Image (tube, rainbow, N blue to C red):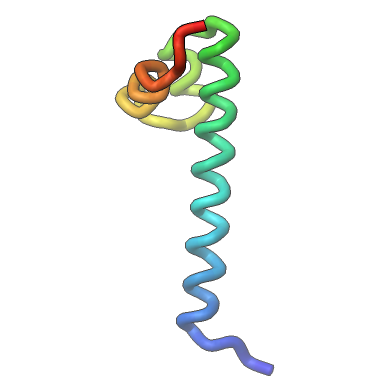
Length: 61
């Protein structure tokens, strides 16, 4: 059975969304541990601006 191009595209988009979510979860964990933003951006491969937004949205602990 051959899968349609549209279905294959949806599968790839789901994989990408999962990777992005995993990067954000890793960044949040590192932010809670007090790791510097520049290091988090490098390790998670997220833009510094996105890491700063994640930090701004963290509840004060």
